[in-house]
Amino acid sequence: MHAYQQDFLALAHTAGVLRFGSFTLKSGRRSPYFFNLGQIATGAGLVRLGTAYAACIEASGV
Image 1 (cartoon, rainbow, N blue to C red):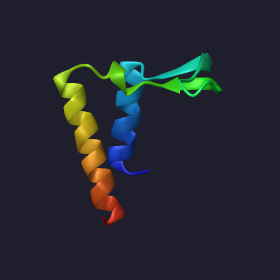
Image 2: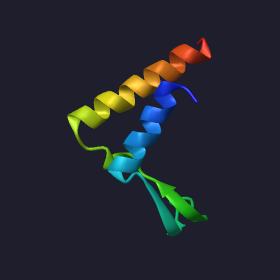
Image 3: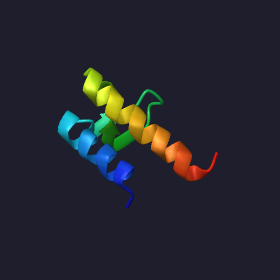
Image 4: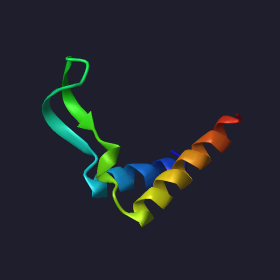
């Protein structure tokens, strides 16, 4: 796993982005988990998220 992937997962964990339970999505489908990036609400968190996205794009060769 790349460092940017590890940092993204650590950020998601500390920010409480991933929740498990029973959720009804906007589409009406049921899901056993919910991934809410809106939980990343600090400037430092957004910098980490943007850095991870940029590294992912760079690694993809796009």
